[in-house]
Length: 113
Image (cartoon, rainbow, N blue to C red; front, side, top):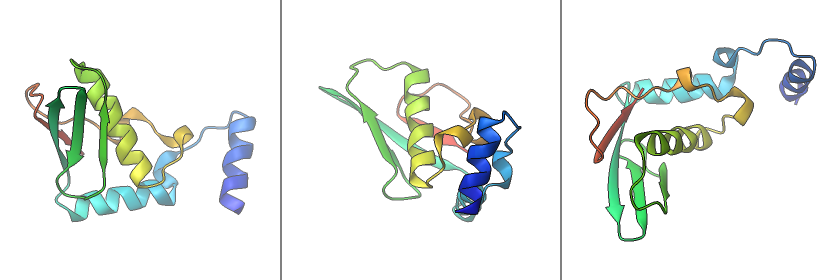
């Protein structure tokens, strides 16, 4: 409870917030390290959209109803799903906390660390 009050005050007063110090971010990184240091997502197209499912951690699933999603749309959705799975609040969700580390733009596979 005290942490939440601190974050809200820091945001209100425009103090810099360090996501690395948050216990939810630390937990997310610990779990990702425990499963090998990265998360692989299987992306599949369907007639009414697409879905992406994490292979290492069951329950991290996302998708959209766009027939031809852009790479950015898929990556943003996957990032949101990872942050949501670990309970990281929106104001701590920085793009550099989780980055796409794939070497080639393949729609079927995404790797985040």
